[in-house]
Length: 312
Image (cartoon, rainbow, N blue to C red; front, side):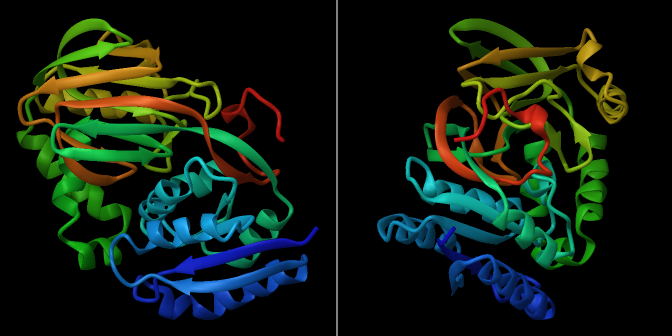
């Protein structure tokens, strides 16, 4: 089947070394009958602008080359359109690519799987706040300690590029050492809850950080978000939560609450917020689901437990 597609990439984000790999991936898509054009991003926000251009041109697919930050930018440009999102993983974090069963470091194989993928509609989350413009997320929005870590990592782009996930661990250990649980008020579908929490995550997908299932029962097409609240204060509570998340037993911890909701509002002092690993500001924020608002390419290798509905 002929597919009109565009591949976007950032030539400065490690792509110089991977340019030949990208060329082979594009050749693979063309071998499957795709008509492929390429576009480069230069400035922050270019990926969103290029995604909107793709929708106005009625392209079938926009393929983002990069990590979760790039995927987030593209999703913000494609939401509520008929243009589907595909991903060729390259970057620090590639959680969506892992959920889709796409291999890291092998763009040609990833391209082959995209070419043979089906298209599905999935939910997205949307965050807005007093000083935060509405922002879409595909994976999750975090409030508290994890958002503090992403905020502290973000200015150190070169170290982040060199160390990858290790950078988050190093900054995370430092931040967790001094972090104390914050008092927060949550409105989960209108139900008011008072918590002293280390962090809360509104998850659309299951994986977090690419290695653990923070929301093992989440689905990307059920019209709901899984809100996981980690209660407590201090380093030992944080460390205990981390260990239990790693072994997948956190959902049975009485200090961890899970709420499946269409919307959640969070307020409190000094509570940083992120979407898909990108810091966006501080609470108060309102987070809500936008059901089946984004088309995505879903390879046969994708985590099928993410879906409750069949493909188009």
